[in-house]
Image 1 (tube, rainbow, N blue to C red):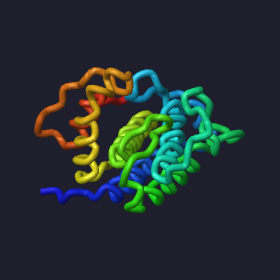
Image 2: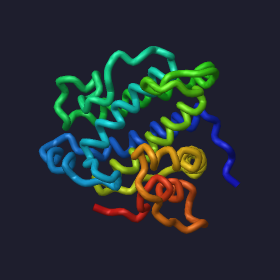
Image 3: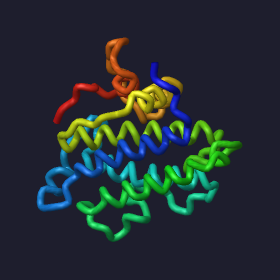
Image 4: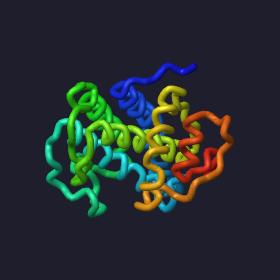
Length: 205
C-alpha cells in the first residue's frame, strides 16, 4: 500500500513533476511550433498552460506567505516574473518559481489558519491542496502537449485524486474542469484524477 504523502512533500513532488514536463519544452527554433501545440486542457495550447502554471506559482507563493497579490492575474497578462521574457524562455523560469513555492509550503505554519487564493479567502490547507493538484495536472498537460510521457509518483497521484474528488463539482461549475471522462476503477490514482478533471489519460496530440 502506498504510504500517505505529507502535504508539504506533496507540494514538492508536484513541483518536481511539473518541472520534468517544463524541461521537455524546447527553447530553440522549435519553440514557436511547440508553444502553439494543443494540450488535453480544453482550449489551451502549450503556451496557455505555461501562462497558467506561472500564475499558479505566484498564487502558491502568496497563499503560503500571506502576502497579498498586487496584480490582477485574471487579465490574461503573463505573470510578473515573465514580463519582457520571450515565451521560448519561460519554461525554466516557471520551474524555478514552482520550486520557490514548494519552499514556502514547506513551512508547517503555511498550512494553518486561513489565506487568500488570489482574492478568494479559504482555509490554507485547502488552498495548498488545490494548488498542488493544479500544478500536477497542468504539468501533465504540458508533457502531453509536447509529446512526452510524465511519470507521476503513486503517492502524489493519491493526493491529487483526493483533491480533485473534493473539488470536481465546483471545478465543473466554475469551468476549471471539463465533463468527467470515464476511467477504469482499477486505473492508477492519477489517471482517475485526470478523468475526474475532464481529461482523457490516453490523450495524444
